[in-house]
Image (cartoon, rainbow, N blue to C red; front, side):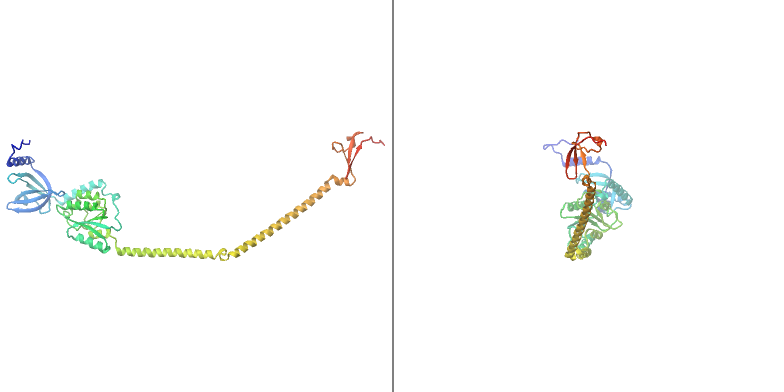
Length: 404
């Protein structure tokens, strides 16, 4: 419980510090993981700083020399360890420190197992999926480079990129690429370049090193920061055989910093050769097309209808005359045949006409109704008949015939 205090009844410093020491002492012993820095030995005590591998947080550790010397292998600056400590608060100095009871270096096997668990976790979230990889711009205007201070990786990227395309521009962020500050500085540099609208692609480059040296580039916070970038990121960590987790989440992996420069920046010489080849191919295609069209135009001009247009008109005029003469002959023949038919028909009509019979001296007897009398038995005495001759007709009355 907190002590009741007031401006009139304050607690002395010693009492407050004793209370803090009491609260810290209740924590007991705990296991802590971190990275050793500032390792020194004085007399029978070894002093070191245990730094968090991700955050910029550290704590002082005092260790009896015997506890330090029994650790195998013996820890050195930069080593990653697991320490069994007892939190202590020194009342006289008002400072906090850990007292190490046991030190265990984190082995390569354990580091690899942790990296594999992290790799499976990130893969299950889809951060390594090829669908989320973005294509690099053909010719980036500005390239963001995250690298070590005055490092060979920086020189390799800059020299090879400018050799390929002299006008290329860079924004370089020099950071710690190993040690306790690497994760935070690299992450901050990546986020800064990603927020810069002028930067078209980001290269994270580092030369080769041991597994422990490359551990910052497999840190979960850095990997997730790269996955969240809107700008394409190229990972160029270590050499061909090195494979930090950053390689899997980046949009493109380069085997070396030099390879990164070749993949990000096009070669101006190669592009000029390509342009020349494409231009020559274009000329051949256009030339072939012009030749084909010119040949077609020549064949069209050589056709009779275009070579001698008047001759074609004359030929058509001759055809019209021929068709006209043929039509006249056909029509004349048809009229002649029709005239012959009419004459034959007229002759037949004349031959079959009753008028021709009457002209030979015959007559036709008809009743007033126009009925032709064919037999004498068909009339009676006193009946009036009309007798028709070839030229005229007369009326007659039927008289009884003499029996003699």
